[in-house]
Amino acid sequence: MKNNSEDIKETIDNRFSEILFDKNDIEKAAQRVAEQINNDYVNTTPVLVVVLKGAVMWAGDLFKYVSIDAETDFINISSYKGGTKSSGQIELITDLTVDINGRDVILIEDIVDTGLSLDYLKKMLVNERGAKSVAVATMLNKNAVRKADVSVEYVGFDIDDVFIVGYGLDYKEIWRNIPFVGIINPEVI
Ligand code: IMP
Ligand code: MG
Image (cartoon, rainbow, N blue to C red; front, side, top):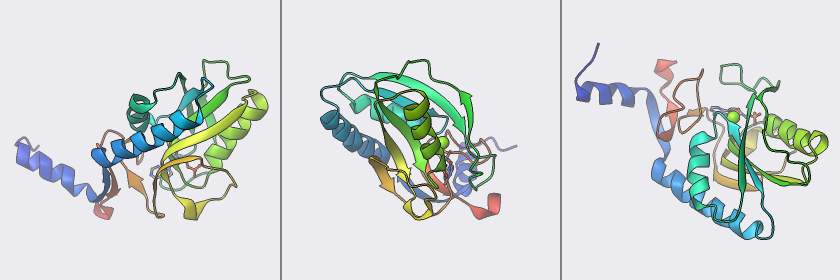
């Protein structure tokens, strides 16, 4: 077991081959996206719905800069069954607590990949829950892999089709707590 701090740092670094965005990059993107939201939702009180678990860190940054009146809520859906490919099957794990009937909703997402999760959520919130509108503010957008024709209103960063972790995103439920968006060292998985 390693117990000196240099060894621990080495261990952490070895898990990732590249840092794409650090916490300062992400906070700046959150500020930019929040300003767009502040401009677009002046005469309404939207419900900011954080899509658990991945969007937690991004939502924390975004919330600091959303200055309009807004309510917040959480929903937990699962689309990945632990690997690096989308299963396309979405399961509702924890539901909203706010009644969104007639409300403007902004989904706070970690990443839009195939778009299947977002498509499911948008349709459910409009068709079954009666939301007046549903927009999405995602930290990351992988455009190249889209399988569902779904609109993405606010984007932190567009990225290529590469599997990333950190800042909320996981590989088999680990590394959500890493304070940057990075690429896993292929030797460790
Ligand atoms: P989609 O349904 O394919 O758009 O995928 C949405 C979900 O898949 C995201 O909310 C993430 O939880 C997960 N996901 C997609 N790409 C990645 C990735 O590169 N790393 C980690 N999770 C990902
Ligand atoms: Mg997610």
